[in-house]
Image 1 (cartoon, rainbow, N blue to C red):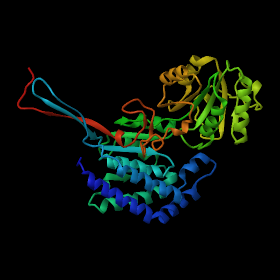
Image 2 (cartoon, one colour; image 1 turned 120 degrees about the vertical axis):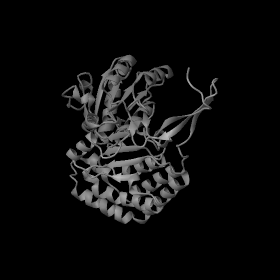
Image 3 (cartoon, rainbow, N blue to C red; image 1 turned 180 degrees about the vertical axis):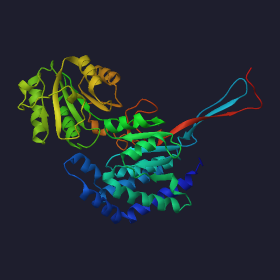
Image 4 (cartoon, rainbow, N blue to C red; image 1 turned 120 degrees about the horizontal axis):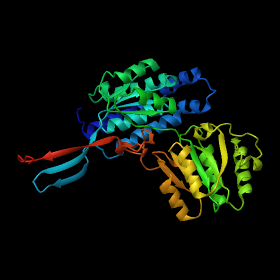
Length: 399
């Protein structure tokens, strides 16, 4: 793969900023076609699909932020000279070709492509059928920006495929693939893992938990819980499950207060055998499967646990490994929770809604990885490179 210099890459991104602004009416019009064809029964998916002027402005901001970041390719990780005279330099290097499979969100067509391109990767964009018109209009902008600087469309390709065609492509791709990132639900992830012939980096489900410890400060608990649950229900960083410690001195009051505040915000509350007696709702979780479920809806479960260790064990069993919170005033308990909870992000007295590239200082993100290799959390520009060893010698041989 040809390595592009930083000036050319940034010039392409500057052109992309121009076309996004210049063609915003066409982009929004294309999106309107997608919205009109979409079944609004799935409100979370519909919200992700919408592109308006504010969303185009966000796309422009994302491209500009990546343009202004340092080029991640060719950075020196280490530079050592061994006793035998070999000089060994470890540098960052592009992956090659990345494929991303995603649903609904047209802004991924911008964020994924800008990150991959600045990191000198080619990218194949497999968007969902519900966003085809929007994605095709955005990819036109990319291709015009590339053409302005003598680069071909192969750098950023849009794959308009149905499920059987995608399946066959994963089995027998018509070009080398180095990494696939599926962004979506469990079925999509399993589908890709089953058929892919290269590395797969999972952007997993949310299903995030909050644990309210016995000494939790309710003045912090309520705003954190409300924000994490209601700020954006379609986000993978939204809260789904709330666990109240049975040892809280005001256990019943905490449960009723949390329910009351969330119900006022329009959240449907489900209870458990431990909590229903203190809740106004009569809705009970009907299966253990609910504990594994990511709701993406105005719905939450309020359950109970016995102690910090019980909370850690419970969350590690059921959560999606994305983002989890402890609400406590005891630093040692917070430290133990944060060290032992197995998720990409752990929070002490703060909302899960901060698990986002922009909010965490990473900038635009390809996805939130819940895998442990090669990176966990927001996949930003620095994370879209691998490494390569450059070994310089003067005729050395191994004896």
